[in-house]
Length: 47
Image (cartoon, rainbow, N blue to C red; front, side, top):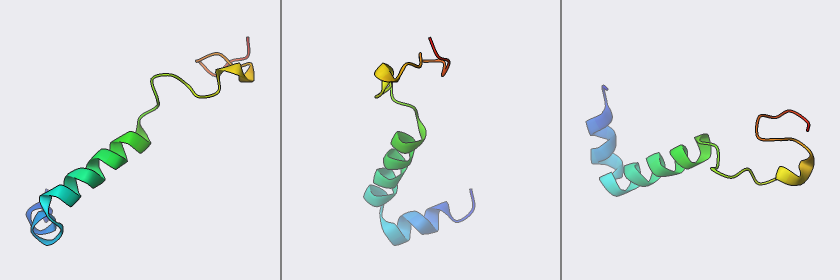
């Protein structure tokens, strides 16, 4: 990936890793859905 080294040099590896971790946490669904009592099952269909 072009420019990756420049970003690490500019921002620092700690910041780059923290941002990557935050992005993964936002993009991946939680293991346990927060609102299971809404009437929907895990597939998104109503029971």
